[in-house]
Amino acid sequence: MSVDATGASAGPALPPGIVLCGIGDEAGASLDEQITALTTLGWGHIELRNVDGTAVADLDDAAFDRLVDRLAAAGLTVTCVDSRIANWGRPVTGDFAADLHELDVLGERCARLGTRNVRVMSYPNDGLEEAAWRQEVLARMGKLAARAEAAGLVLLHENCAGWAGTEAAKMRELLTEVDSPALKLLFDVGNGVAYDYEAYDLLPEIAPYVAHVHIKDAIGTPDDAHYMLPGDGRCRVEESLRYLLDHGYTGVWSIEPHINVRPHESLAVEGRDGVDAFIDYGRSLERMVSRLAGART
Image (cartoon, rainbow, N blue to C red; front, side, top):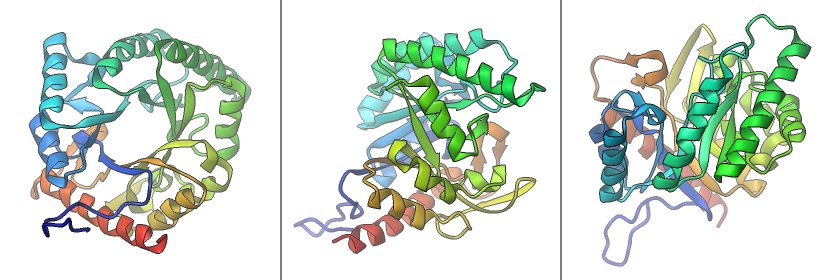
């Protein structure tokens, strides 16, 4: 933590070009909890997924207007909206119209939120042969990227659920085949535990294409994952962040603690307040980031 000329805390020392952020609903369902968590950390940036239990694209107009106004009043900049497009709940055989509609809504809403970035995945399989699965994913992602480009958006594909979710070669193939400036990669440091692969091992092949980073850490197996503070698990968080810095990454590092609150699993653990846990997670990351910044001076 650095100190300004008056002796007051001036936030963590950060490597050049790095911004700290967090996925708001990991602190709590309500917008109040999300704003409190990020403003207490003093980071000035928030990543949006669900607000008051509702996906950003599904908020009614009045609720969305309140969201825009509240974030502006709190001085929070939106770095990304985490959509449901092609995610674990929308298999490759599902209704593509739902994804196109969500993207159209977010095209308008992201403009008002001041972000171009929309998190996507690449469609879990649902009984198709590998070749048919690949073909359908590439066809859908090509159409989504074209529509995103026209709307001024960038789709950030996460190493999570879907055809290109766990293998670097497929991530590269996805980018090559779609061939659009509106499709880039989102690297989640901690997804490997839940999906049974080593996320760090992806980096030599994908680092140049990473445009956004999620930070979580865990131990265990896909059937029994346990999430913990960054650096306390087996996901090689600090090594991953150092690798990205060494290969020229600048941009957002966004926390997704998964400790007390996991909205996609309808999990809100009884006991310790989610906001406090989120803040503690953020402070733990700050200490790690300060070490990384110090090592580069």
